[in-house]
Image 1: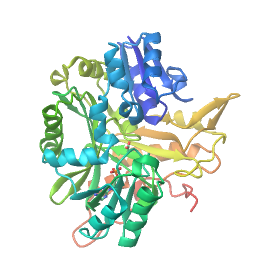
Image 2: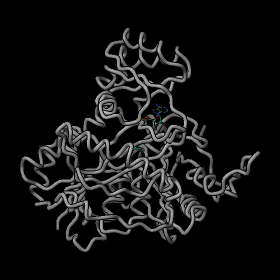
Image 3: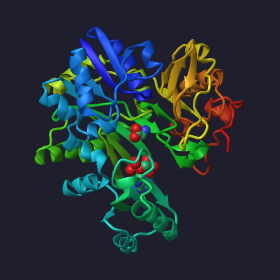
Image 4: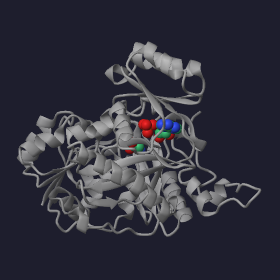
Length: 451
Ligand code: AMP
Ligand code: GLY
């Protein structure tokens, strides 16, 4: 079987690495890939924004299965393009991808199908937005309607800050067309979870639960990013919570799609806030998360090719996924300047020694090989991922590997998965558990990111 993976990030590296394990796999390609993926697959440069170019490539490769990593090609309709040409692909159609491509579509969909989500107002002009703002208390959340690469959400602490965000999005067009229309919504309180399923529209396979770390700096400070690290641990959600998410969110979402004549096939990511009133949907993504995929793939025992083939064939209901109970942790190492304009072209050293540690895998994102040197080539450079028998030792392993890697200006968080340790050792009544660096297993000597 010839498989094509579309994308170039850590998520696609983890997918490629896992797909390669399958006995069904004969040839594997990635478009466009990165230096790490090039160790596992043949990389082909292509414009992934063009569904026609991607189809041309898949036809040329005679790909038996194409897996789409990022949202942009899905929103642009790559799956429709492939399906109309009879080329097998796993991913949602353009109509289904609106769940991610338009926050207004997603909110209206949730309201139509009674899926729990924050109360909101939709505005199509600045004056309408300012008027709608009056019905909300601060903090209030302002979301640009369209795709904005993680820059389209502002949690405003004051009305002035909210008005500034609205001015930026709608009047000054800082996000281009993506900010022409906005969602204003109440700010929810609770713990965030990334709950991802694979579905063929009817059958659903739950992936292991994960938690992302979206803010740049330790303690959830600093600006939002694409994700500075993630971990997967069964203790993130107990069976009752998983059941509630399936009943209140996943099933109604899939039923809603069917009722609206939208066929959904692929990964569906529900970004949830676990509130006192139960799970509430913050966002849908129509793909796997990055960096959530990295720890998920480290824990997956089942054959991913088999799972994807049954998704393609509509027989997923007879499948389930098997997981190692061992938790996995992914620490993202990013370039100076990220999430703004990153400094690139810096030499990365120590990565071979890091990868030599047992239970550790480096999933590359922004890397390239030049003159036998590994160089940084993007904001998020690599996700150092480790699996171990308990969360504490998985954290320790990941940070031991991180310590071996060096590039100028590197920044990373030192507290990935710390919340998971707190969950496993809850505070005694009347006192909170002080998680010091040594207790939580990450090296006290780890370098702090630049302020
Ligand atoms: P989104 O792209 O919609 O997931 O938003 C990015 C991040 O903003 C989320 O991961 C949350 O941390 C935060 N966020 C979004 N919506 C809300 C909300 N209604 N209440 C609290 N935090 C939110
Ligand atoms: N890590 C968040 C996302 O993939 O959207």
